[in-house]
Length: 262
Image: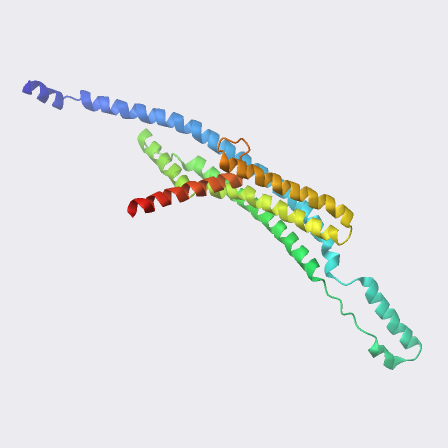
């Protein structure tokens, strides 16, 4: 019996079987990883394309709105013309000394106008920031796609891919990419607020339409976010609900670790 054991230990059958199992494992791993990565890359590439297209269109609309409001930041040219005419009349009457007594323009934009402009510019800046983030996101996805395996044996390539994938989880890649659509949604909300406030001081009846639409959109979005947080199986998933779920899971893990330590 002892001789049989020595023969089996010296035999290469066991080592070959181990190598076959490892090779089979990494072949299965690569197939599963290819399926997952294909879906992963397609989903996020599509999301980034949507953010880029929408942010481009929205930035054009927001810029047009800001340009239309620029006249509110400068004095009315009619007032300046009236002052100059008054000075010319005084000169024509020979009353040169009275020219200096004509009041100069003391116009300055109202506080509400400045606040509306600030909100509008913030909306435009956030939409451009979302577009910039989407461009970076597409670059990150391209880097992951082209460098996830590298070169080497099948096992080395599989380990390198797993290392790259672990990096995505460690550095919260999903939350970062999901934040770009969130920026765009906040930008849209701020644009609705600025547009409604600007119309309120010009045509209140028209402003009610914009305000009602903005409030309805905000309440509807808040309700579906709450529904997603209450029920993870809710089909109305949004970037904000995804980020909040991640934060809630992480906070539970941290709390459990603290309780275990104590």
